[in-house]
Image (cartoon, rainbow, N blue to C red; front, side, top):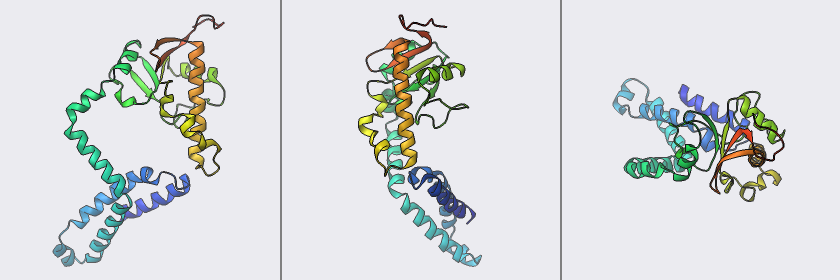
Length: 243
């Protein structure tokens, strides 16, 4: 019952903090734990439940588990089906994970170096070759004092260098699947959740800064889809000497 109360309390806190956004995602860690424990409780035999005087608790647990599973059923069903497909097609997955474009761009970065990546499918990068910091929601989590996303490209470049990031990979041709055409409405639509609006504003700023740095820093790799920048080296004719 304590876990059930915790799950309900966490869900309530998330509703307030997120204004109801993404509850199926952000409440899942609490809900799945509470559901699992409650199901274990339900699996106790009815005879034992009656004999121990906890029939009411057994019934409550069953009802709560049913409600929790019902709320998350679509997401849970999708997750379980996708997980089963992954297990059954493990060989195909290993082959698919090998991305020739990502492999080429990683070869130009020294092995073991720290690289920041903003690409469509980061899970297809070889994380055994480099230390990779992947940017998903720009500015959501970053070393203090945080990415200076509203201070221009040079401020961002200096921030990254100060934290040991020399190489940056960006899939600019597709804007890492976060385009203004698809998500620009999140900034202008007054009905957009504030979290989504800030996410869009920060992401567009971050990607714009990467493009600006791509004009001022040396591209050690560019295949027309992705580039890799050396933040410590300026492009010829930029007017400033590299470090």
